[in-house]
Image 1 (cartoon, rainbow, N blue to C red):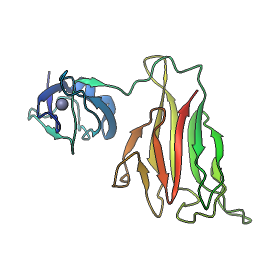
Image 2 (image 1 turned 45 degrees about the vertical axis):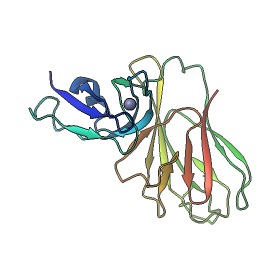
Image 3 (image 1 turned 90 degrees about the vertical axis):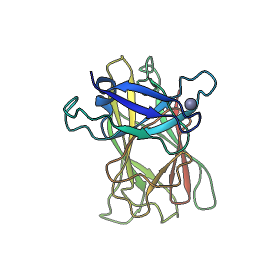
Image 4 (image 1 turned 60 degrees about the horizontal axis):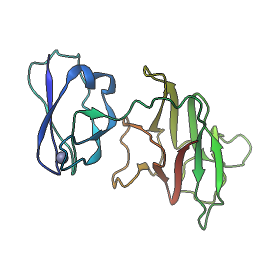
Length: 197
Ligand SMILES: [Zn+2]
């Protein structure tokens, strides 16, 4: 079976993950934990797009930008079917604190414009932060194979970008991020926290 090598940017240890394990996350950003007991660094890793699993005999080296690595993939969230997923919009000078429940399927997120005929997203944030587009990003809630649900964040063609946790770079057009409880999404000057309770 083809293996992908992943080098931990923190401890430098190289580990292997089979194509089979990575293939379901093709093109997505996954969370991994370095299995070196002295390291245990947790970081996001962008999985390359696989043309076809095992089609290419070459080994691909995935160099995580700073810290990394392991063989354990933390995405599949088990036992969360009885929990409700929420977005908590943090209060700031332009925005009051707001709470939104996420529904199954696609949830579009953006600024509530309030003008007749304007696009209204599923999660319509009342704010004067005009760096938030009316349709800014989306979270897809979907069942996974482990009996849980995954929460996948994607930009939706925003003018000013969607940022995840401490990332300095906005999500690219096709980036998909698996959200975990307490993850932070930043739109414009506004911070939104993902919660599962
Ligand atoms: Zn490490």
